[in-house]
Length: 179
Ligand SMILES: [Zn+2]
Ligand SMILES: [Zn+2]
Image 1 (tube, rainbow, N blue to C red):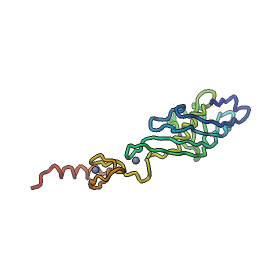
Image 2: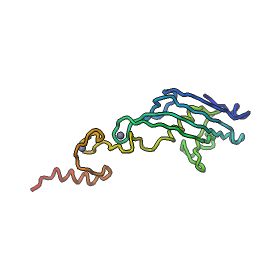
Image 3: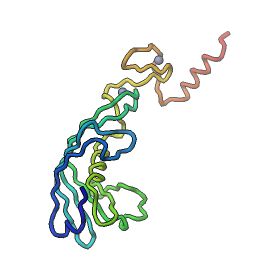
Image 4: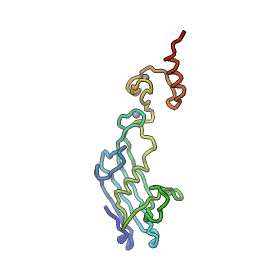
């Protein structure tokens, strides 16, 4: 659904959509597992500046890959969103797609209006946590033997995956023949 500036100039535009999987192109990390439902309103805040505020509620279920164990991870999102879109020329030079302005998420648009699917894509990506995990308690893959530790305990000695030096040190100890 395209929301044109021309339409917004006369009145706020209400929307209620049901977007089936495959219509919105997220990054390769996730995809929708069912239709995305969204309803809300787009309105022009300041005619001369062309600022469009899109507010509403979105509900969707997405699936991706767990960052820790590489198995499937599912997320249910039911979010209220409130985004501000400003014409791209104003944001030129900032070099970022997204900036925060007074706690509000700000995006840019080009041309004669905004594509609702682009807005919803942003809503979903903003709602996802930085790290995707299949569950809070996911134990991940063993850095020593590669076993998925949710399935089976491999019995390897616990170690901090961030501590590369200690890993290297223990590797060296293994290699160095003991006399
Ligand atoms: Zn996992
Ligand atoms: Zn192991």
